[in-house]
Image (cartoon, rainbow, N blue to C red):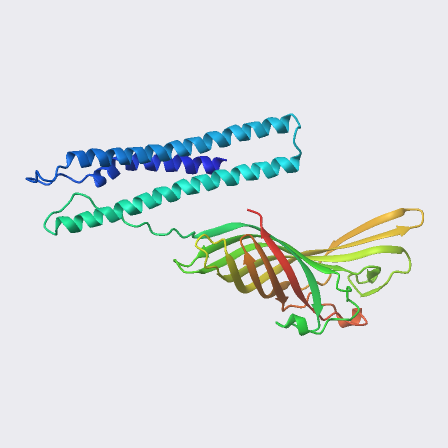
Length: 363
């Protein structure tokens, strides 16, 4: 409602402020010594026409706002009296908003057409008067289209993590990892970022940067991370025998900085877009969580924090295809998630993350 009201007030103000100038444009100064072409009646007629058009448009704007306000007040009363369901109320509110917007857009189009016709009349009049006669009227310069220069906000990333034997840009044909650390493709990627996107001049190219946090979660199901009693740390992934293990997962968290180049030809930055770039990050730590049942204790959730031999750095490439606030993308990590000494595991983990993800810009 606020946007519609501002638009209506702006249209009314433009009509009111433009009326004197338009009357002057409709009625150029009378030519000297030309009794055969009286100008006063033409001026009066033109002035009346200009005034009536401006008044009619202002009245239509006022009527649209008044009708919208009354219908919204009636809808609010229905909601208070519980005479309408929440779904019907939302649908009715959307119908009222759409109708008001259509009416305001129609009035705006009528005003633009009026201005275009008036400008053509002025050009014709100047041509008929000849080059030696200069009028104190200059047609308004065409407005330059405004381009949105920046798109900032907070982005939420949710994805599914696939473990590969070797890093590749062709994820569809890559060989999946099947070693001891295989989490049965139940890995996931979660991230939250603050992004800064800037247009390069008036081109469709944007530069996007940001910073945020990414968590790579590996769900091992009913396997567990065995920890040597003497040295500490992860030895291997093995079945749980001593307890009735229900769930076991490990999450490694990173502070990451993404950088990418975006192609978005939309003037307001709200159309289709494609971006490609890279990211790099540093490890913050890890969290292991096991949920099991133990005799005499019942259900137990055990959480342990540590580095778990996670890679100190994360880095890779990613690409996204988006529309408005939403994107779908893929990313390939070129760092091994874990670097475990070979003496501590029957099969040292050596795999790479490849994520398919979706993002949404929250604001």
